[in-house]
Image 1 (cartoon, rainbow, N blue to C red):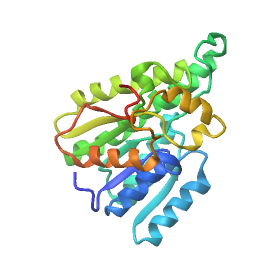
Image 2 (cartoon, one colour; image 1 turned 180 degrees about the vertical axis):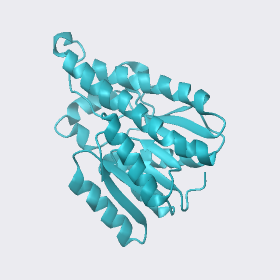
Image 3 (cartoon, one colour; image 1 turned 135 degrees about the horizontal axis):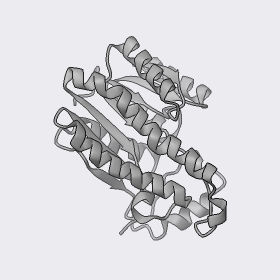
Image 4 (cartoon, helix red, strand yellow; image 1 turned 30 degrees about the vertical axis):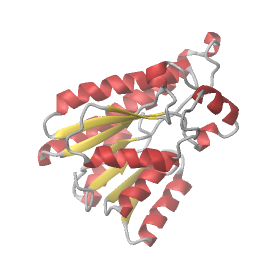
Amino acid sequence: MRLRDKVVLITGGGTGVGRATALKLAAEGAKVAINYSRSEKEAAEVVNEIMQLGGTAHAYRANVAAEQEVKKLVSDVAASFGTINGLVNNASMTAQIVMDDLDAVTDEVWDSLFRVNVKGMFHCVKAVVPYMKKQQSGVIVNMGSVAGMTGIGSSIPYAATKAAIHAMTRSLAIALAPHIRVNSIAPGAIDTRWWAGNEEKMYELAGNLPLQRISTPDDIAEAILFQLSQGSVTGQIFVIDNGQTL
C-alpha cells in the first residue's frame, strides 16, 4: 500500500509508539485518524503538530474495549475521510505484577487486559473490514510483544494477551486474504511512559541486549510503516528487540 493520501486509523495514537507512527505516516502523506481513550490533550497535540507541517489529521475518542464506541469511531473516521485503508491496532494496557505473585492476578486484572488488548483489537478489526472489503484492499497491524513469545513480561496476563494477539493475527491473515493483509509487531523493551518509575524492571526484563540499547517509539513506528507498505507480507510477527530474545 502506498501511503500518500491513504487513510490510516491509529488506536492509542496520542502517546508513545502511536504518536511516533502518526507523525511518520503524516510525513509520508497519509491522512491520519488518531484514536484516544484518556489522552485527549496528547492526541490534540499530535493533530496540531501534523497540521502545522501541512498534513491532515483528526482525533477521535473511543474506548476500544466498548464495541459500540468502536463502531461509532470507525463510522466517524469513514465519514470524515471517505474510507479507511489501514488500521494500526496500538491501544493496549498492562499491569505491573511480579511473575510469581499469582494471588495478585485477579479476575479483574484478567478481564481488563483481555477486554482492551485482545477483544478491543478484534472490535477494531471487525469494524474496519467492511470498508476494506468494499475497496478490495487494506492493511492491519496489531501491536504484540516479545512477552507473548517468551512468557516474560510486566505480568502473566499481559504476556498471555500478547500471545493471543499473535495467534489472532495469523488467523485474521488467513481469514481476510487475499485483499486484506494482517501483521503484528512484537517489540522488546521500548522507552515509553509505560515504564516511568519502573525503569529498573524494564532493564531486568530486557536481560542481555546484544545491541546494548532500548528501542525508541520511532524504531517501532518504522517497522509499522514497513508492514503497512510492503505488499508481500502477511501473517507475520516482526520481532524488534535489539536481540533480546536471542
